[in-house]
Image (tube, rainbow, N blue to C red; front, top):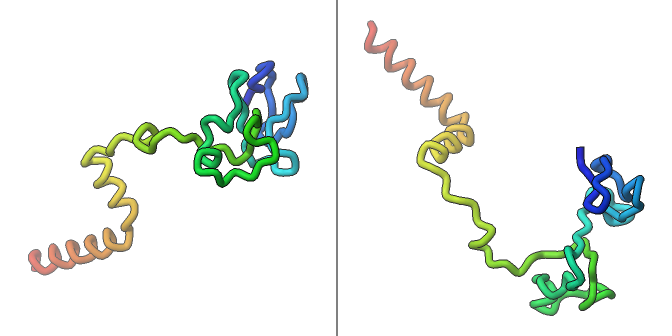
Length: 117
């Protein structure tokens, strides 16, 4: 179960406000949308991609402390996942191509049947 970032009270995943401290957790009317907020007194706009490229049209810009569209300006390599191992790549390919696996199995079975006779 989730907990409130302010008072640590247990909350439902679709809760818009914390039942204990009334902190807004989600964008009003859109319970599935995350509401990003600052950790300190610095505005979110200082580290937001939309502010950097000047495409932000949020009315509270440049001093917004909460935002639903926030995107960090951190480079993509900081956020990149490590490369999967060869075994993980094979496993992913096998799970992604079940039709080819079935066709290969049928070909292998027919080859075995021909060699047995």
